[in-house]
Structure formats: C-alpha cells, structure tokens
Length: 293
Figure 1 (cartoon, rainbow, N blue to C red):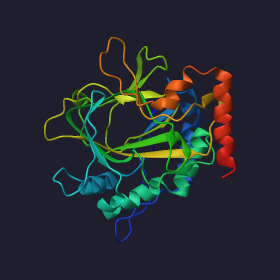
Figure 2 (spheres, rainbow, N blue to C red):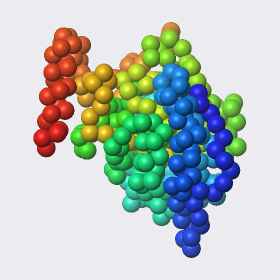
Figure 3 (cartoon, rainbow, N blue to C red):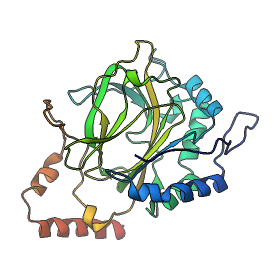
Figure 4 (cartoon, rainbow, N blue to C red):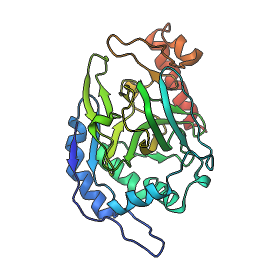
C-alpha cells in the first residue's frame, strides 16, 4: 500500500460561501510525488494520500452529510454480499457545499491530476455518479471482496479508476471497516487501509482489482463509516484487459461461505465457454461500434 502524507497546506481558498478549489499547481506536484508509488503498488495500482483536502472541508461535508431520518432518499440493497450500506447519487438532495465538492472531484484540473499520476489518458467523469456519491455503513455492516462493474451503460464507457474520500474523524482501528486489497487470485489480503477522515484512496479498476471491507464493523451504534466515491471512465481500454460487460463480481476469501451474487449476466457467462479468439473479436467489434457512433 502506498500510504503517504500530503503536505499540510490548503490547496484552495475559502470564499464568501465557503467554497474550496483544488490548486492545479499543488495537484501537479502531488502527481509527480506519487507517480512511482502508483506504478509499484501491490496487489494492483493504488494510492492512499492523507489530507488531500483541508480539515475544514471535511467538517463542512460532515455538517451536510444526509441522515437516515427520511429527509433524503437513500438506496440500500442488502444481501449476503453486502449489508448496512446506504447512499445516494441524487445530487439535488445534497447540500450546496457537498455539491460543490462533487464538481471539484469531477473537474478538469482533478481529471488532469488523475491522468498524470496514473498514466490513464482521456478520462471522463460521471455526472450521474452511477454507484458513487455519498455512502454510509452502520455497525455490523460489510461489503464482501469484489471486483467492480467494468462498463457503464448510460455513458457507454469503460470504468478505469475509483476515488474514495473518507470522512470519519477519530476512527479507531478496533471499529473495523478497513478497505482491504486482495491478491488477484484471492489467496491473501495484501493491504488494509483505515477509513480515516481526509484520506483519499485512488485505485485502478480491472476484473482482478479485488477489494472491499468484508467483516462486520464493530463501531459504536452511534458511529458510521462515511465516504464519498467517484468513478472515472474512458472510451475503450487496453486490449489485454477487455472483457464483456459485467456488474459487481463478489469473490470468496479462503474458507469463506456465502452466496456469491456476481450478477454476471448471460453474456458474461457465455464468455467462459467461448474460445479466446472469439472473445477478442467481440471486444474489437464493440470498440469499433463505439468509435463509429
């Protein structure tokens, strides 16, 4: 895990309405500082950077964080692979400062930072926040190890990068909820990242980018695991990484027993029985169709 401490400087400035703006020069330096760590990260490219935003930004986001009182429509899809997690992608229900920060993480300067530190070019932010947005997990909640969906049908783009900003002040390690990064063959956990306030995690999305927080959290009843998530896309991806579109693919740890809800879909299942050369042709056809639209 590349866990580093960002310089304790304020990259933006307060305005009359408490706005925050990423400083392009700061982001450029941050990319230069962490580029090698990204390339050499194990088990797949990722970064963990503390204090990427000032503490007052975290405080303001927490002030506006939606509660579970029914004032904000929160989605929840509990099953054997996930429990206790709610969220919303409806920006209209969020506070003004939160909406402003979502725009900053989807801004051209932040996209440029992501491209420079990862080498992934022509990135596109998702204005619909499909699967992203505001997330909150309560005591006993978990998210089994999984690889993320690789294709966004609304945008018709390939998912390439994830960014998570944690908002949990005074988070005790005993609470759990650490983000775990697992070997590609699911043989062991390589890294555990505590979801501490102001910490940003960036990681690459591929069919073997296995991650999650799979054990029930032990935080007090009045504490929850809060975060904001952003996903970034490109039109196409490297040939070696292409596969047919699939949704979240949950994976079992050694000795673990649960009903895997891979939601692969018929095309993903058929892929297992199709010769590799045919899969390559299908992927090429899909790429060419997108280029012609």
